[in-house]
Image 1 (cartoon, rainbow, N blue to C red):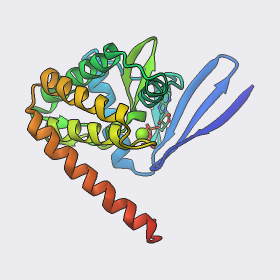
Image 2 (cartoon, helix red, strand yellow):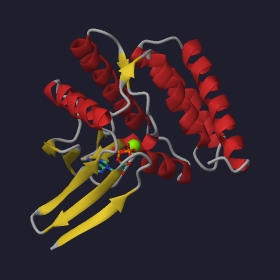
Image 3 (cartoon, protein in one colour):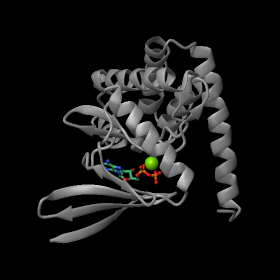
Image 4 (cartoon, rainbow, N blue to C red):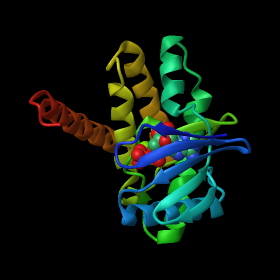
Length: 210
Ligand SMILES: Nc1ncnc2c1ncn2[C@@H]1O[C@H](COP(=O)(O)OP(=O)(O)O)[C@@H](O)[C@H]1O
Ligand SMILES: [Mg+2]
């Protein structure tokens, strides 16, 4: 058997390859620099013991990755809202992953690097543990920028700004501030910036721009 299932990707071509021996992910990069960046960061994180998919093979701007399954942090988030519950241990696990990520990239680049692309689909829950994927946009920055974006993303997933999401956001910011050792005010400033940027992107789409 050999099946290629296309996975949602805005920037690249990503497939789940199913074979008799098992499955893996094939990520075909549109851009060579992004391929090199993602391969490097995956290597740095793996070496530091941070949960990321193993690279099975890397060649010609293609990464063959360990398949971590289909449950993303967004799936968990939507399920929690549907059940009107909130298992904080998952939030703590996400923050622990982030903390490990920031410390591993700081040690390697001798400078603070951030994820930059922190949408909830870039975290996969595998064996009940959080794994990070998608590192092509990793770059120098401040941790509160990622934290503010995370919080803004959380608020605006469909349906946006519900009571449950607002409550989650308040708790999330508290935990992010404490665990990542950043000021709450900074996170809230960045959150507002991101919400405004989203608003702009959206009005652009309404006008038929995208
Ligand atoms: N190692 C992996 N295991 C399971 N699913 C993956 C893996 N890598 C990518 N995916 C799936 O493919 C999608 C796109 O991959 P991603 O690396 O996020 O690329 P993009 O830069 O296009 O967002 C992810 O949202 C996820 O659903
Ligand atoms: Mg992605």
